Length: 383
Ligand SMILES: Cc1ncc(COP(=O)(O)O)c(C=O)c1O
Image (cartoon, rainbow, N blue to C red; front, side):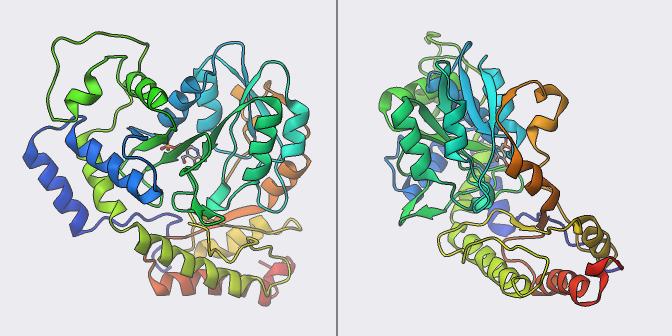
């Protein structure tokens, strides 16, 4: 069997190792000047003020403190799709609020705003939409709903670092927005994330929430120093991004354009090959504005498992994004609306390998694997 093609494969090369080694040489391992430098690079990439980005140790912690900063707490409800990663639902529960799960739309697999509106109650404080796979959700619809019903919006853009809508990068405008830089994201810090907030006051709150509520920690640590005369002014967590991991992020963001463009090309090759196949539904985009985190296609008609079995001996690994969160034990009792689209989509979705600078032979093998299944008769049940 040929070597397996993993679903994800981060690009860690000499440039990243050099940044890491320089960060170790500085000797200030925790949060510091490197964290600030990374935040400023993210801010400049997004086109927001340098102090608007607050880096965290994960995307999940970014979501948690973004929700707290948006005023979400015990007694509140937050609406998010069930078709989402459970990080969002856990982050909502961490605030003491209740999760309310909503269905998605067929076209972009993002939140269905009409169905979301039907779930709004007096207790609803915020809406948490996801830009699935890097493809924009109905962002206009989300913000219209938020305005009508006076809700905060915390955007989960963990899949969409670099995606633009009408020429503007997600996260460069709107309410609060969160990104993840975990091991498999478009750029990685090994583990990391960030919140982009709009006001100085909210950024200050985020700084406190990020590091144990200590007032001077951000300003002083950003100079690779410690303050000994600090006060504790808020609740806080230990969610900061260290200099060491920020150095990985700095190396990665310098190459983000190259990573995104190479991923787009793979996605376009996949779309071109698979859109010809009966029995495959490809993402409805040409990826021109999409920074593709995963390539998720749909196999209707109950043939997905047979296709996965067909791909396995050909060394093509497959992921499933997502198991809907309302199916998980811990969230089974959460309030939810009808899940007609979600229930169908989760039977059909599968994620094919997609890497930055993916090896052409990997791309060819994935394409041959999928097309071979449908053209060789296996697609009609002979896998
Ligand atoms: C949609 C979504 N939201 C949030 C997260 C959480 O990010 P992290 O892994 O950095 O905590 C992920 C991670 O996979 C994700 O896919």
